[in-house]
Image (cartoon, rainbow, N blue to C red; front, side, top):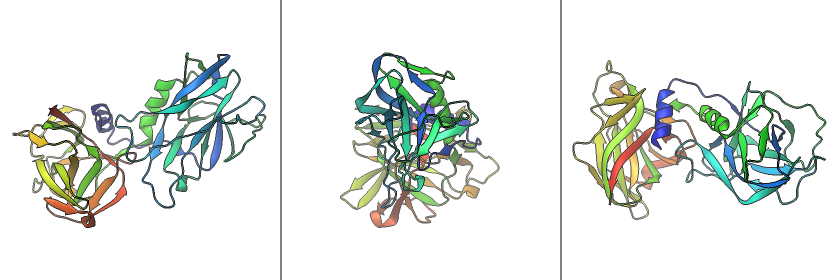
Length: 335
């Protein structure tokens, strides 16, 4: 996780998420007008939730373009593919469109969201913010633009074009979507007495880890019977993992609101391909509680109950059913 997102989540640990996911609907975004005779939409700024794929959960939202007469522009649909292996580490999802979508003055951008229970990626909206859209049935290829608009739901999608060719009726811009996209997730405590591995948080070079930075809460009233452990693991073959370095978080330096750093006495050595791990004891037994973002993170491999941090794991010891994002970043010296 990038330091900017760790910092934001740490500052908002006690703030509840807002917003709701779109569900089995087509939403035409009349909020945006394309003011050039012709241009292309090159990317989308998004407020989304990314979930673990399952046999049933395997669908994705898409965008498409409609003409002013309500007809779908053939070939304009682009699917929004994200997975737990390519989530945003900064919290800002900007999805490049390849190829870009050509649009003309008067065209309308629309978002199609499959049933939310079947969707890996869910587009969100926030109620109570003035913005113009119209809702139709999922899969419609022709829309009636004389229906009543929805004026109090901000769909967290913004089209980025060549030549800055987007006007917004209510002065919504990319930055405003980004700011509100942060709000659809909140932070939570990890499960007690669990070992976590994050196979998609990979060191991409050889080097030394010199500092851990994390978001959490220090509770000096709790006993320090056990300590959280931040770890480096190495995969051995197709089935095994060995812990090759770790830091027991036993001293904290506050550097921001709910933001701390820990400097290991001896830098931890890592190799390209090593992965991040974390052991979280029982909350009642620790003074330093590290939080995680609820959702939209990389896949988490999670053990059953363990009362001490293990030094080795096999695939049989862990389950990959969640994708919360631990509020941790590092400083390294690469080589």
